[in-house]
Amino acid sequence: MKLRLCAPCHFGLEGPVGAELRRMGFANVTGENGRVLFDGDPAGIAKANVGLACAERVMILAARFRAETFTELFDGVRAVRWEDFLPRDAAFIVVGHTVSSKLFSERSCQSIIKKAVAERLKEAYHTSWMPETGARYTLRFHLLKDETSVYLDTTGDGLHKRGYRAVAGDAPISETLAAAIADFAHFDGSRPLYDPFCGSGTLLIEAAFRATHRAPGLYRNFAGERYAFLPPALWKEAREAAEARILDIPLELYGSDIDPKMVLRTEENARLARVRGVSVRRIDVHDFTPDPGVLITNPPYGERLLDADAAAELCRTLGRRTEGCPDLDRYVVTCDEEFERNFGRKATKRRKIYNGMIKSCLYMYFDEKRIERKREQARENKSK
Ligand SMILES: C[S@@+](CC[C@H](N)C(=O)[O-])C[C@H]1O[C@@H](n2cnc3c(N)ncnc32)[C@H](O)[C@@H]1O
Image (cartoon, rainbow, N blue to C red; front, side, top):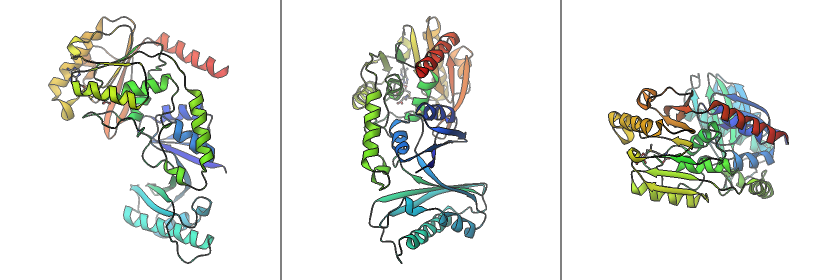
């Protein structure tokens, strides 16, 4: 069964998601705003769910068409071979959004889509009613400027829910964004990693996943596991293949935070994530002294944790504490637009990203030659 699949993601992460999909062997990978489309099949759905680090979910693109009227919406949805995916007793819900479209009422679109799918299934199964007593399927729709996309979700709880962050800090970074930052940093575990504002430890854990080739979804379940056309054997194979890829390499991951509760939380989350090599201490950033390596961090900013002046002062301190360190690449994600001035240095490179709905920027300070060598090494390993 050849399918067109879609991996939605935070705005700004289309590049890393596309790169992940290509590394996993998927073809025809194309990025759009906040989503990446790719070709796949049922086995690919299991593989993508288990393995993707930076995407939010994996969906089947069931149909894409223009709809300016409810009749066009109904006809477009009814034309899909839903019986290939949903069994006779499927219980299904429809959720979605409309943006800048003539069909602006989400509730009305929802009920039209539900009705069109039910009509299609009744005809296919030669029945006058759908009992909806079986497994639950989730359909998602998105109308953007009258262009309608209808998807079957295979993930359920978003992919950022890895299962290790039972308790988060007050302002945790999303796991998928943390994974993308580790990717931008090319973190491969060959040098120590520091996070002096570690909170719940997300950046350390996601960087460890990247370095050890750990599939982030290895130890969680997905909605698609209930779907009849995605049998258990596919998920088992995807998990076994992911297990076989894990690298057993020693890691040095140093987390610190001023709050002793966060120290315990990072330790607990690393344990739940089955990540080894994490050492966490209670340290005020004023006393932070890193050795050569990589620093990836997310300082407190403004409204959520501190007032803006105090947050700016912490960035000044971070700048001073890391200033003279030779061979320390630095990656700082923040929504502080004055960050470079506070930190005291212009970034080698900047990248706009979203932490949930919050517009942020990743400021990168690195040795360009070293990163180029890492890229070359990755290309060589791939061609071997
Ligand atoms: C934005 S949160 C980091 C969130 C983290 N990335 C996560 O995923 O949970 C900032 C953290 O900085 C810590 N912090 C605040 N002031 C600090 C200081 N002076 N020194 C070290 N850590 C500090 C807070 O306790 C908080 O956990």
